[in-house]
Image (cartoon, rainbow, N blue to C red; front, side, top):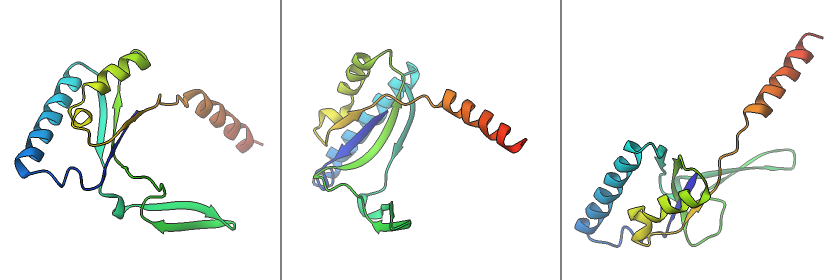
Length: 131
């Protein structure tokens, strides 16, 4: 999974023509990744000020407005890529036009496979329900 961060105001601070060029290049590149079977999913996020962060406090859910992280860059979107290994993922991400424009860093993390844990949990729950 690739988490794409963006420096607030940097994209908005460009001209309309520059924004269109970046977006067109990004979408064209995503079409290329999709056609090669590398792009599994992509999601863009609304601006950070639309976020709510939930956490557990004093035995109940507490909600705050905005993102939790106190960082210069804010999470802008995600992509799930199909890659052979980390080096292949790094190669794919290094070719992303948005990354090349220096809009912000991209964090790469392997996606956790929870299938086995889910099967085991299902078996435990079935056992518990039959008692």
